[in-house]
Length: 246
Image 1 (spheres, helix red, strand yellow):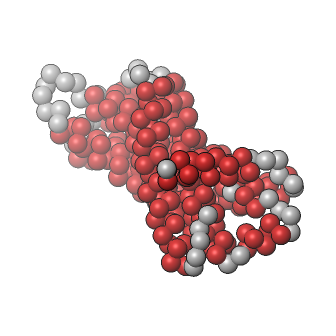
Image 2: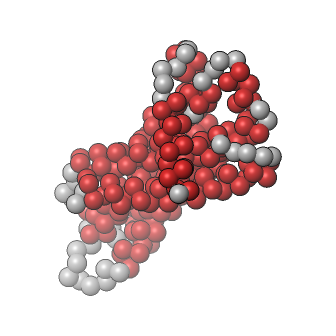
């Protein structure tokens, strides 16, 4: 019953959120601000994690392909497929739901417990539309660029790790990374990216919006938002893989 209550409240909140804004100018301004806050400020951690992620995938793949029967270019092929299909869109989303999602929940939760949201409602402003919608739009716009960058950095990190460790030559890695590439793989990754962008903003916003009590409850809502967002992303990852890839 608790799950159904959450689903119902979340659905109603989203209906309220996606109403036409009262001021398109204010929406554009808030979206640009949120793109910087949710996206640009996450560049550092995305680049670091992506580089090491690609390096680890390459080293693990190369060390497990010691048989001479398997060509060396398989390392580059496996690294590319792993990064594009799974690691960049999904792992980065899980990282962002922890970093960005907790911030969103804490920010909106603080606004709730300090009566700022109530003040907006008293002034006749659709608080959900004003606060939540710019975050969802901003994440949906900026995350595809972040994930594309993550893919490039991961594959580049794998190349560097493979060549510097001597496990695979640059030519073999490059050949494998280009082998049998289909643009549909990238399209599939972008679909997941946009869906996950919605989850990692809307779910934390929901938990923050319905926070009750004081600062302790704000922290509790933030934790619940990260856990719920992570679980939903993993479930949707399975569903989208079944629908689009298999």
